[in-house]
Structure formats: structure tokens, C-alpha cells
Length: 480
Image (cartoon, rainbow, N blue to C red; front, side, top):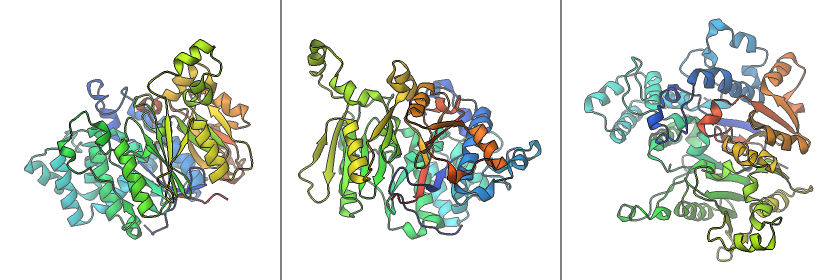
């Protein structure tokens, strides 16, 4: 694979290259008794997720990022006799796009190297408590089969060696590109330990990242962390990519949440300032609740002057502007604020700036960092109507992926949020119809603007992550 530059300076610049992972057999092995341990709320139907949902994600990504792979070929690609070969990373007919890049493919690539294979097999077997015999059997596998086994935990004969890693489809969490550097994660949950290990080996060993070997940033545990009592959660060092957003060339957001700790945010601020990668880091502290999980489940950007967000964190909700005086006074006495926001400046770190509400911060980003000439607007989850606001936030209404400014992917089940997009002047199109129009030449990708592309989501949404979660952008255009 030819080496190409990686650079991300915003959430909304035209997407040119990203990392993804197609749903593998891991998703079909989640059982009810282990679902929550493996960070799932429910079991999902693998065949539906693949054929009727995620394959559409692959198609639309390729049409936008690598059209030569797919334009005019869909009928042939999806013919019954081809049996999804185009979508399966271990198949000879796989698309092998260098712009919509599959993690399993990268893993198989690095396993061709004898030394890397030896180290990685040993590392996986150590954290999974495998026998020496099992380790030897794994090492005897070829690179393609081994890559599948290390992800799924299952041999070709169906025997399970260790637990699957079904969350590997959420590639955002494994790392984030900050300008021309890569910030790797430290997952909060044991279920994602192997993900982090495989990812680390890929970033440090694949030719795709060779020129970035001195630009890979890892955070470390605090000194004597192993002596800390279990209840000292904030002293743990855990960081997931859903809590990191590159919103402008000099500004990074870091969430402190159920999955990312204060100590991790502290390290990120210091590491990025030491390397002079950004001038500002804003720490957004949200409640440690499964409902929210990461900051990208409560807000994402769709245009330089427009954001989609959960109304629970809005000015109206926090200030209780519509409440009577008694209610307003009582609510203001709560010990725990729903959100706390503090911004650090590299040039004046001892004088942080505080934001009272999430809207205040997002307006500041749009108007100060991105120089938006238009008034900042907000699209609220569920159109801010209870119970649709919280229902649709649960199914990732706020977790959208921007393909280019104003053109976003979201789930088709979040009807009220879609109405809110329409009210802001967005066109709404289902991915089935858009792909048909693209194939027929009725529509061109470059002509689309202010458009929500609705994606099928009955099973994907039950995995608790949207398209923002299922993408790790490696390259975006600069925004003017």
C-alpha cells in the first residue's frame, strides 16, 4: 500500500481516508449472559447487520471516498453468485480500498512478518491465558487466518479459543488523528484490551504508518497506579476516542465520561502542549452514565455553524428558563452539575476559561475557531420533545459522521431528530435511493449539500454506537 499523508484538523472537512472494521463473527457470538460484560445491551443478528445495514455503509463510503472501486459496478458486486466477496476482508474479491481501510486487512499484512507474528501471538496468548500448545497452534496459522482468529477468538473449525472483541467495529475508540499525530487509546473496559493491543501493533508496524512512528502518542498509567484503591477511579488512566474531537487546527476537545478519566485528560493536555500540537484543549466533563458513554453520543458537528446535540445539556435545560421560581431555585441547588467545561490555553495555562453550557462552548468554536459568518444553530435530539429526545439519543441521534461539510450519515430510526434536521433546511434521503441515483448518474457526490443520508439501523443501533463511532478519520481536507 502506498504511503499517504494523514492529517485531521476538524470534524467537518471533506473526508478522504478512514479506518473501519466490517462486522465479523464476533458479533454473532455475543450471548445474553455476557452481553453487558462485552459492552452490548442486547444480542444482534449478524447476517442482518452485515447484508442489510453495514454493507450500505461500505457502499456509501466508497462512493464518496473511492468511487473507482464501486461506481457502475454495484449490480455485479451484489450478484448472488459473488456472495459478498467484495465486503469480506479475508476474501480474494475484497475491495482493498486504500481510502476505506479495513483493520483486519492491516492486521493480516503485519502478520506476514515472522518477528511481529511471534510477538503478537505471544502477547495475545499472555492476556488471554492461553496454553503453550494453543500458542504454538496459533503461530502455525497463515497470516490471513490468524488475523481472523485474533479478532474473533474462533478457529476455522468453530472452536473458540478466547472471547471475541465485538466492539472492534467502533474504530473511533482505538485512536484519534490530531493534526499529523495519532493519539492512541487506553480502553476503560477489559473487554477491549485485545483491541488496544492489536491496534498498537498495527500503528507501530504497518507500512501505512511508517512515516508517523515518531508521531504516535501513548498515555501511561500514573506512578504506582497499582497501589491505588479500586475506588480511586479518577486516578486511573483510561481514554477512548469517542471522547476526543479535533474541532479546529489548534483546538482539541477531550471528554471526561464513563470511559475517559480526569487523569487521562490531564495527560492529554500536557502531552499535546509539550509537542505544541494545539493551542487549546477543552475538557468537557459529562455524567458517568451508560446513557452518554462518550461526548460524541451527546453532540457532534455537522457544519461549521451547526451542531446536533442532546437538549439535556442545553441552556434551557440547565438554567430551567421555563421553570417557575420555586422549581428554578430548587434545581439550582443540585450538587452535581450536568456538565462542566474548562478550557486550557497553552500560552496561559494558569488562567483557564470556563463555559457554563455546552452551547456556549460550541458557539465559541464555530465563531472564534472556525470564523463562521453565520449564526450558530443547533439540531436537538428528538427535536427536544420528551420522550423522543432521550430515546433517540440512546439510538445515536447525536452520533453522526460528516462525509463533507453538511452531508452526514445517521440512523433512519431517529424520526424526530430527522424532522429537526429538515427544519434547519436539510434534505433527507435514504441510502437505498441515493445509491440508485448515484449508479444511474442522476446525482453526483460533489453536488450534494445540506443532506442527511439515512442508514438502515435496526440491528446496528442495538450495538450502541453510530457512524461517528464506526469511523476513524485519517485524512480530512482543511476547511477554509
